[in-house]
Image (cartoon, rainbow, N blue to C red; front, side):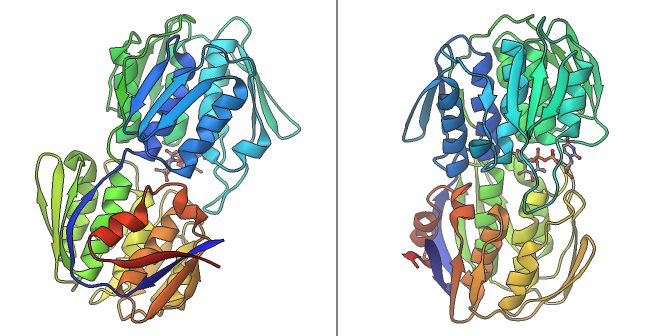
Length: 419
Ligand code: UD1
């Protein structure tokens, strides 16, 4: 198994180009199930989660070609509607095929994704919304078995909680439904917005895009024609590299970003004493490595993203004072705290609140526990005295494209080695 060996790195300098957003590309790939044409998706990140979803679609009978960052998918020949356990268990976001498969074929079976490292993460909201649209749903032998023989009908859906993939699933189901679907308390993440914009530009009228109330005019099972798509930049990848520069000190320009997607992150970095100079599609991050403490509450967009919480915990570990992080979205998303503590961080957990007293970090052997926890350990390792070895980095490969080469290019001392 591979691991990363990282040595303290200071004064990072240069440029990093951000890849396409994994969490935007996933629903877009699932959306190709609604298309009657071969779809071209540009700026698709070459990461494990994307390859997993492509494999899932190929298992159903779709054709896919993925070269560099261009993905072409043709779902015309789908001849199975069963997303099996062996794939779904490796990636929860596989649940994104549920809405489009059901809308197009009137039947599908998708393995229950189960729990994951960061909490139980149920899919009850996805299922109850589909039931409101007329689906009959049964859970049998670990599978969601969904039927809507005469198609799905438009409905009023009120989400009890804001759910990103839940909103995406229902948007895609509603796109082919008979009649109008209204989603109240919809997620407004940029990835949801892109999905809506693409559908809206390709024959599915959607009102209220980027608000919490969406109105989707279904095509009554008419498949759509999708023009070429370019995936938006990955705001979490950008935020991760911004944190790397903040902790090591340096002057790095992060290119191919949308500054509007990064407001919560830049504003916290600014509070911590990091200079962020915004341009139209790049951001220059300047830091002397001395950070002030922060107080963070994770919440839905445009608030502070839970997917950046771990990285900011790494920053807080060396800040000059006491920081607090209140994780409001997931009940078990502090797995990185004990690994950071192995590196000398002073972190006290009380339920969903972490209190971090800044100090110094030392290299150690640590274990990545989930995707974003892995990046927090990298950020900490870049600052720690001595050598850090991060094990189980397959988590990292799920969501970061060319991480080592991007970091090495700006002067970080990071190597991938085999155990
Ligand atoms: C998505 C992102 C993930 C991010 C998360 C929150 C993708 C592929 N993943 O995950 O990176 O961390 O949003 O921004 O886009 N919930 C329920 N019932 C449901 C659905 C969700 O109780 O049916 C709860 C979850 O347990 C969680 C909260 O709602 O506490 C938000 O989860 P949700 O927005 O659904 O996360 P994902 O879409 O899985």
